Image 1 (cartoon, rainbow, N blue to C red):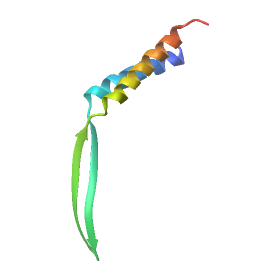
Image 2: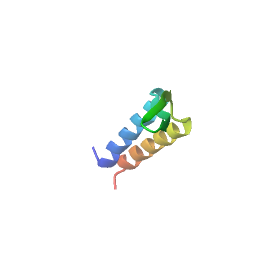
Image 3: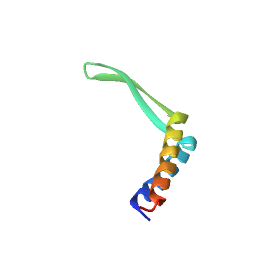
Image 4: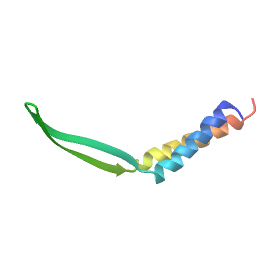
Length: 71
C-alpha cells in the first residue's frame, strides 16, 4: 500500500473516532497566598466539533482516491 493510502486510512479512522470518543480537558483554578494554595481542579470531556470530523473524513477519502490512481 502506498504512503498516501496509509495516510488516507489513518484520516478516515481519526474522522470516525472524532464523532464517538470525547476528548478530556482539565483546568486548574486556584489562589496562592504566601505558602498556602487553595485550588479547584475541573475536568470535562467534550467531543470535537462535527466540522473537524467531516474535514478528516473528506481528507481521508481524498487521500485514498489520490493514492489509488495509477500514474
